[in-house]
Image (cartoon, rainbow, N blue to C red; front, top):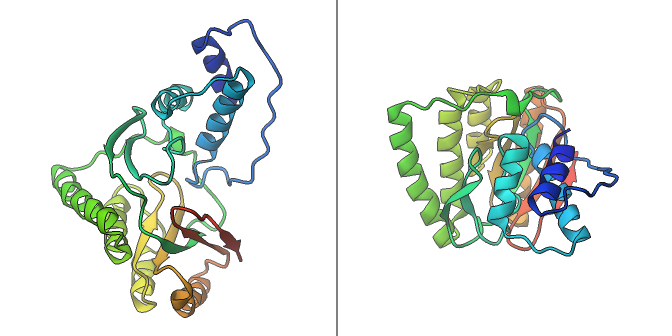
Length: 242
């Protein structure tokens, strides 16, 4: 269990090797979907140990220990008020974008009908030289989207990244999903970098409700009968499953 490893490594790293304890984790994060369940468990464990000894830890230190505990880590230890480009297998920030991601509504779903994959067993994606150059341009667009808080541009960035990722981690029915997103006025399509979940991005607020519901109905016609909705902004992370 990676959380147990994280607890032991945390005790060793902070000079408390002789200590022990009881660890229990209660979580509703789906496993093997690419939702960050392992990072959530590891991060909660590290913070619990730190709290037990009254320690305040820097996010960068936590990130490195998280990677040592689970091979690769999401960037959950950094606050959502500042989006970062994160090297998940090195535990380091490559670029601090300085602001949160633009507010969006997300209609999420699992492309594998409830199944998942062992994400940490997957080899890193071997991008081509063309794809690497494309990511440079995509990163430039992302920086502008964050600086200008432009949700439309963020949607384009997500779709461009999704198309490249599809060559390495293909998701079922992706051509149909891209077409549905366009037909329903979604800003873009995003996918987990290693798991099976995907999502349609919409403008924030009630103005996109009709388009989102049309997309939900379209997902049902494609066989994706369970979806969930959440909103992302600097102050809110609400979720409504269906």
